[in-house]
Length: 92
Image (cartoon, rainbow, N blue to C red):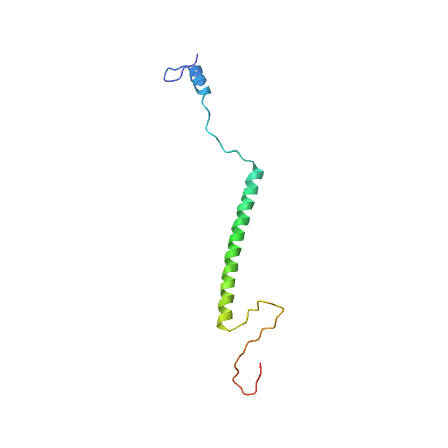
């Protein structure tokens, strides 16, 4: 019989360890790894696009306020904005 350095029998150790469960390991395939990577990549892309769109909307709002531009809410209606001119008789 083979004995371990402690003098215990290897078979007795195997029998004692047979009743214990091994720790749970995460198992995954290459396909699941690729799908998860694609989902994470799309989520990051969507997040960055939404940040860019938010910045563009803020800039558009500031430009409309600065240059007194109209933001028509209803495209079926005509919007008019009075704008002063520097020349008499000139109409814009």
